[in-house]
Amino acid sequence: MTSRRVKSTVALVVDISSISLLDDAHATYYGRDAFFQGNGLPDATIAALVYYEETAVSTMGYSGHTLAARTEFDNVTDAVINFRKATSSEINTAPLRILMKTGGNSRDLYWYGHTTNYDINGNELGTVDAQYYAWSKVDLLLNHDKMEYKGLNSNQRRRVAVHEMGHVMSMKHQPIGYSHLASVMQDDSYESWSLTSVDIVNLQYMY
Image (cartoon, rainbow, N blue to C red):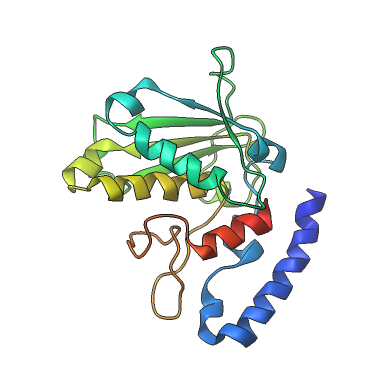
């Protein structure tokens, strides 16, 4: 927590310099502004992020997409982000679970991917509260029925996985439109298919 309080000061400097050097481009979120206020999972957890991926992810054809997402974040230089697959004894305690959403009303939900966050006591947080409280674990859900219904291609499904992994890292949505730089964290936008320089700089700042 101390390191992140220090980082808040750095973020202010970055934002001010962005205003003077990049004119309108400063509207893109940088530094602390690019992340949920509650910081999400602890730094130590992100540095050795144990994940469990249910069998349905593979059987429904998404394991390549989730592997690509983990690899992108793993490969960010100067950021301590590492993934490790849960052992059989860690399945129930893994801080990241990658799950499939299918059946029922899945097709009618508004989201292709979603994260469900849990507070330090293991209680599920609502969408708003998840932005302001620290997490103990996260479920990353991929909505197969919705993606099938809307006809998303392989690249688009991969982007959903990368975008949702960004939320696992506590990254919030980036704004879309004129003067905003491309980011995989832009919602419902395909200007970028993977992490961009904006995303990488922010991850290097936080981790």
